[in-house]
Image 1 (cartoon, rainbow, N blue to C red):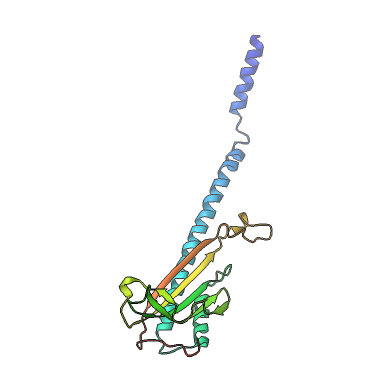
Image 2 (cartoon, helix red, strand yellow):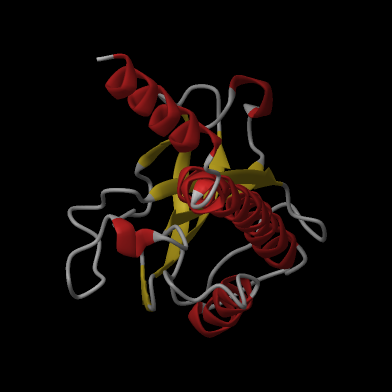
Length: 201
């Protein structure tokens, strides 16, 4: 009985003293955590960078429009394309950029009425469904009667770099799962006149 007990104790000591394979186990435990941290850092830095670009799109397009004395669909298309190009090299999704020219008056229900509007909608150009004289919202501090504003909205459905983890077999996202919606809005006044008419909007 004593011999068997001693033998078991000796085997247990040999087992606990044996360090072969310890590195492999530690590696298997640490690598997934390190991989998640690395991908998380990559995603956060990528998302912050793209969010800054979305803000730059709104600011740049608003600045381009407000430097005009008048405009037309062709000129606006060019400005919207410039805005879209600011996202490069990010090409996973195209943005939506909406330019809305607004006649301001505090007597209007929401502060303004649409003078004209154009939109770049993920590769196509349209009027954003905004009709002339349609009510549109203007912040209280910008409601100065008889003035003119240009509002630019930039929106992007940011697709994470690791979207394949939550996508289907084709790599497409399932019902927008994992998409980060980014948006920015700028209001600017005309630089060279009281308003900016669009000749064919």
